[in-house]
Length: 199
Image (cartoon, rainbow, N blue to C red; front, side, top):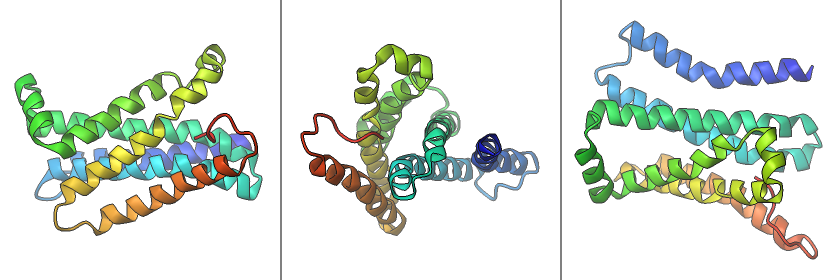
C-alpha cells in the first residue's frame, strides 16, 4: 500500500512537467511559450514547497506516518521545478550571458530573492538522502531549517514581480505564514525545547 502511495505521489508531482513537455512539443503553450514555462514551473515550485511544509502538521493532526515518507519526495520536486524555473529564465530571458545575469541580480530585487531562495534549497537537495542524514546527524536538521527562509524569499519573489496584481502572492504569503506560524507555536509550547520543530 505504501509503495503504491509513493508511486502515485511521484506521478502526480511529475504531471505538470509532463504537460509542459507535451504542450511544447505540440506548440500549445500559447502566444508566449517562455512566459508559460516560467509561470507553470514557478507555481509548482511554490505549491510543492507548501506541501512539503504541510506534511508535519498533517502528520501530527492525522497520525498518518506514511506522510513523513512523502516529505523528501515533495521537497525534491519543489527543488526540481525551481531548477527548471531558473533554467528557463537563463535560457529564454538572459541567454546564458554572465554579465546580464549579474545585471539582473543587482537591478531586480525579485530576481535576487528568487535566486537566493534557490541557493538555500540547493544544499537541502544534496543532503536529502538517508546516508547524508546519518552522516550529519543533528546538523542535518539544523541545515534543513533553511527551508523556512527559502519559503519567505520565494514569497517575496512572487510578490515583488506581481506589481499591481498581488492577490495570488498574498494567498501564498498567508499560507506560508500559517505553516511557519504553526512551527513557531509548536516550538514555544514544547517544554524545555532546545531546537525548532522539523520541516
